[in-house]
Length: 361
Image (cartoon, rainbow, N blue to C red; front, side, top):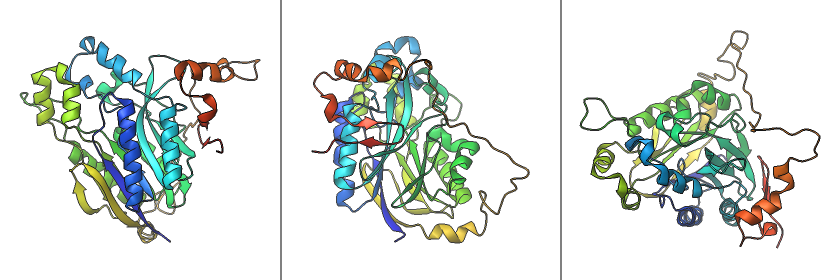
């Protein structure tokens, strides 16, 4: 069976509220499953929303927003991720979720991350955006190459990149060389780069998405599931303190869209602008025919001329020698109890970079 239904969660998060946004994630997972989807993808940094204020106000005025954003970011071994894993398992659906990830080695360091969770609740891939883009550097730490990989699943070989990573030909080529069939591209609700009162051109996110999604689908000969979030009234209220000038820039900035692009580079069905769970049926067999034309990870390349090396090791701030476990690993239960005093450790999944397992009831 090569036909599958995929879903995009084209939704507004509850900005700076991880608990409320996780509830929206769980509801969306259930709804996508009811609609027959085997995969649902959430946007970039869906939990706890995208930090658009970094584009709108100088950092010396954003200390409270930074603190709130970090406090509402998620530990990968925390109860919020565990709840999403359980939902994926319960509804037998693959989940791709963008989130802001807290660093266990630092109380103030965060990554722009994405998890691919299998329909059995296991974490299949954990990716951290390799370079935060432009003003995102004011918040997020650069990631590493550990998550630059394609995962074999029941619906095909899945890869994903976060927003501007889809502009990086080396990152995209890395996924092409692992026989990627379905690519997931995640985006924010908008990405302002200019005040509308200036003479310059503001960033048109929809246009950028169309260019990048079409290019990757055509070059990889893969389907591309694109998902952006929504900036609506809830997000506007959360950022009221930025003032009317910031609101004016937001109102004049082009917004993101969600869509599916086929291996020919054509958009399938509608381009999504309205909030909701949207689904498409795709047939992976279409990939094979197009591989005859340009297979850049196979016959249509010269590996005797070009040589690309990708370092996939997880970057850590320190490595200890002479101990069987690092202090962080040895004290995991104590740290978890301090972090989540009402959540027992034995009810939380044991997470490695590649999988999570749940205790049996």
